[in-house]
Image (cartoon, rainbow, N blue to C red; front, side, top):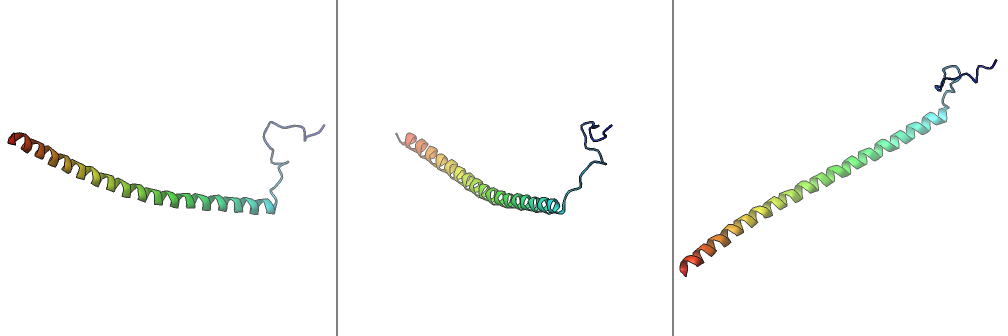
Length: 84
């Protein structure tokens, strides 16, 4: 009877192979690389969010100026209509 053939779909503790030292180092380096990429992406997102905020402020200012101009045009139109 061979015990190696007996499995329930899960690796058993007795037959498990421990990771080699190179695997651990490689995995740690890959994790470090992924973490650096994530941090870099977060920094990029912060920069873009700052730009979005700046553009939103500019848009709000332009909307306000347009409303002021529209009121000025409306007042001029009313004054011109009264003169006729």
